Amino acid sequence: MFNHREVHSLENKNQKFNGKKLSSVFTFSIIITAAVVLLGALFPTQFNNIGNNITGWITEYFGWYYMVIVAIMIFFCTFLIFSPIGKLKLGKPGDKPEFNTISWFAMLFSAGMGIGLVFWGAAEPISHFASPPTGDPKTAHAYTEALRGAFMQWGFHAWGVYGVVALALAYFQFRKNEPALISRTLRPIFGDKVEGPLGIIIDVISVFATIGGVAVSLGLGAMQIAGGLNYLFNIPNNIVTQGIIIVIVTILFLASAWSGLSRGIQYLSNANIGLAGIILLFIFIVGPTVLILNMLTSATGDYLNTFLFNMFDTAPLDSQKNDWMTQWTFFQLAWWISWSPFVGIFIARVSKGRSIREFVSGVMLAPVLVSLVWFAAFGVLGIETAKDHPQIFNMPPETALFGVFNEVPLGFILSIVTLLLIATFFITSADSATFVLGMQTTFGSLNPSAIVKVIWGVAQALIAFILLFSGGDNGLNALQNMAIMTALPFSVIILCMMVSFYKDANRERKFLGLTLTPNKHRMKEYIDSQKDKFEDDIIAKRAENRDSEK
Image 1 (cartoon, rainbow, N blue to C red):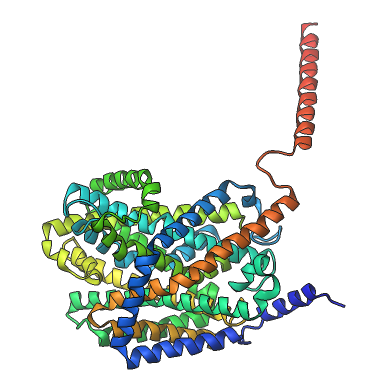
Image 2 (cartoon, rainbow, N blue to C red):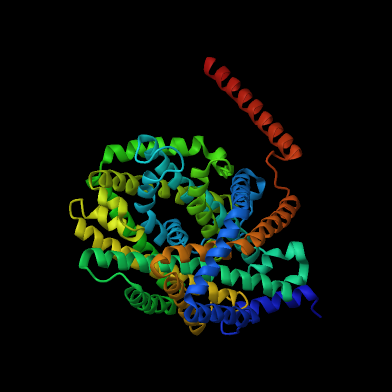
């Protein structure tokens, strides 16, 4: 007869291969999502006002909390790189990575940043330059602050959050044979309670956080595509245009989702990286190349030099910086947290077979480096162009990039390529999200059915549209509200995931005898063997010399 754990393991295995079986998480999540869509559609003004009030309360009372917990995650990831725990593999000893390193990086980067990089690449540094966190606007100091602020919000803070969530999921999924559910990463803390009502609550929160985070990205993508079409072809930039864009792109990403992970997401991710690389290279060529390189070096130094201070500084006595942080930093941190279940589950799915040290190093270092280069290039080009053409400072964020491109050689072609890049990032993010939501609502199945992915694809498109619709002329504010609200409850779950992972991984480390220092007995045997070998070599050399002297 099987014991409880064996029965549980068999059930997990069956569920992994049955992506058509819906869990109660699906039922509760779809009801909540439908309620939000209906409330937003029927009472858009009240819906937006409630969002503004809740967001204001969170940023006033929990801004410090977001700063502290994200700092803890960064320190934790850094610790794992140097810890013996880093030797553990995300999988069985013989498991090999499913995707090559380039494709792996492309997928995690496309899913982890995507639209945000294109939307804010030029717009955010331009905004910081015109309204810096400290000092006077449009000065040399504001220039440095603009890039440092962008680096701070798109660097280690984002990927520290992603790294913790993705690591815990990959570890428990591939090493402990748990289903790909957020709740099951907490088994070392809560035991088998994660299979009951507590687990359902955790997974429902995770699903709604995923929907909220992705909806923000889809909304930003729709806004920027509409802004670009308005700037280039004078097509009205309104909710109708944005809605049509959401419908068209939804059809495209559902087609991609239907094709499966390896074919759809992998190919699109590689295309994203290729297009982004072409645009970045072009900016380096036509932009102020030397200034970009100098500012990249200088701003990186400033970012690292002030990293610890700004990691914890909530500026309670500096009204200028506090207002700036409320608008930017707290929103960005909340966005990373709300995005983390989606990005984490997806990155975990494509990271099987890698060691913890390789995983954390890849997630924390490579994407951060690309983000710094990206914001330096787009930021310097944007600021320098805006200084010569001041009307750019007054453009909304979704249009600023196209205003910049209009003033550079081959700007029209560059704008068209950028629109294509936004669309492919849009499709990739939504495609990945449908896959992740399908996993979370089919008992952690690694192959959720196509119909489940379609349902969630339509649901997240509707949420994005409702947020833009209820926000009216300030759709961006509505998107920011969604990110901040969904992040708060899920942040508690992330902290529990971190504790749970360390508890189990450290126990595994002790069992395997992994340490930073070599085993004393084995080290003595090694030294003795090397000593004997050295002495044998000396004796043989002497004998050789004597023979040569005869």
